[in-house]
Amino acid sequence: MSTYPAWQGRPTAAVRVLKGAALAVIVLLVLFPMWTVLATSLADPQDVIANGGWVIWPRTWSTEAYTAVLSGGIISRALLVSAGVTIAGTALSLACTIGLAYTLSRPRVYGGRPMLLLVLFTFLFPPGMVPLFLVVRGTGLFDQYAALILPFLVNVFNLVVMRGFFQSIPGELLDAARIDGAGEFAILRRIVLPLSKAVIAVIGLFYAVGYWNRFFEAIIYFNDQTKWPIGTVLRQYVTGGAAIAENSGEVAGASPQSVQMAVVVLATVPIVCVYPFVQRYFVKGVLTGALKA
Image (cartoon, rainbow, N blue to C red; front, side):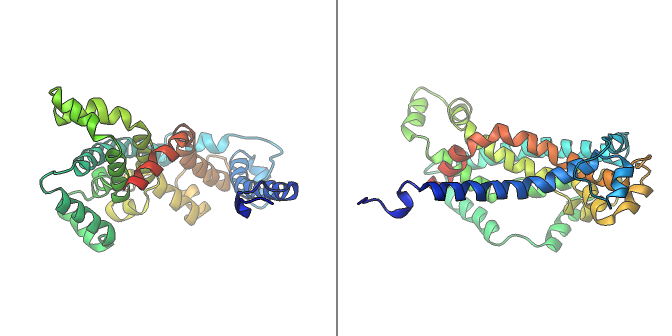
């Protein structure tokens, strides 16, 4: 008789088959909506109309929707805005998070504990929408791209994870560098950052996804709709329906439903393409930092 608990024992053939079937069903449930969106965006307008707006397998493939979307109109501009905000915001957020996390991870830093408590206080009691709006308007960020970056520059969860990872670096290694005459900036640049590629990659992905998917703030802070990012434009296309696509002048012979689905694909693909390159760092980066924190 085995002394291992039931959950640690080798599963029977029936259990393995059941797990495989359940996993296959879950994968199909995830992939089917994604495939439907992609197929509808690539379907001929007549196919879309004949199937009531949704196509599972187009009889005739067409790229008219993507040609219309990428022809230099509001969608192309929104993609450029989102790309710029994501790149700039991710770079600034990583720089600020790395600097603050390294400072708070060092023992005997003057004012380190009160600063850490202040940061955690903002995590427990986040500002409301109205106070944040008043701050953005009072600081002159209204109708500026900085309004999508500066109020969200440092995420407390990301800061705590990165701080925990920095604390896991052996202190003897840093002390040896100090004995050799290295300053704090040199230690951070030459020792800490090369050892922290995993957590930096994961936190960078978290920031990038957050900036790319940001849509609600643009509705509040921007009067000029030409400055909207792709997330806000996507929301307007999906919730506004065909009328928005027709009024924007971007349908150009394509089905409005195909245009909507093309916008969904274009708003999703960049992050989906980045994720596989960072996925291998997730366990090492987030788990180590979270356990140490």
